[in-house]
Amino acid sequence: MHDMAAAPAAGIPLSTSQFSCAGQRAANQDATGYHLDERFGCFVVSDGVGGHAGGERAARIAVDTALNTFTDAPSITADSVQRGVAQANAGILSQQRADAEYARMSATLVALFIDRCSALARWAHVGDSRLYWFRRGVLATCTEDHSLSQRSREGAAAALVGSSEASPANGAQPLIQSNLLYRALGARAIVEPTISDAYPLADGDAFLLCTDGLWRLISPQVMERSLRLSASAEEWLALLRRAAEAKADVEGADNYSALAVWVGAPQQVTLASAALPIARQPT
Image (tube, rainbow, N blue to C red; front, side, top):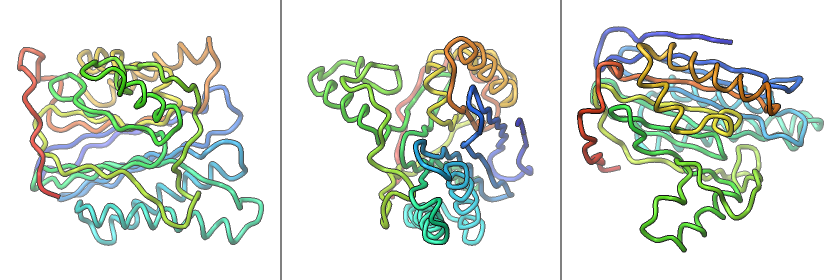
């Protein structure tokens, strides 16, 4: 699946593209979706957690519920974002109760929320689906997974104070090689997403939301390099997809999916502009 769209001309200009691939798996348990209107944008990616029946259904419920909750009352406040994630969790729990076959289904979620008029963005995640934010072609930040391997990586970072080597954004190796999650939608009655502050956007910002199937195949360095070679969000994802396919064919691969969001024209923003500190807005 591949899709792209541009937002109506109002507020900050946004464009988006998405794809989802089964990899070497028989079924695709990833789901993606977005909503764009003249004022707001909401972009969501989810990955059904393996090991239990219903992963594909859980991911679809997560995406659809998060989008529906947002469009019913569009807002990027932390409380609104929390409510949307909680509703996605409740939707999965409801299906668990309704069908014993899917009693243990669960999913990850990563979502980006943009107010185009105020030019602010906020994001949230549960599990190990990630959001990468690029400014002036350089990775500015990446979400931190709710996984045992991430906790191990944080422990290693504590022993390397002042070092940039133990960061999820640069692919540092954790002490524990495990993709087991300690947070996921459908795992508990109350979900605890990590919700960012609200950040001001700049022309040329680019976001990549993706499942672990993609970031395990594609390094942040490849993401950056592909971004600098691209003239559109669609071209960027096409390059990333080709890079992922090349590795997947050799190594075998999980499902891998991505959704890109471009603010303005990243292709016109060069690395000659030094990255500036990113200012936070009060929550």
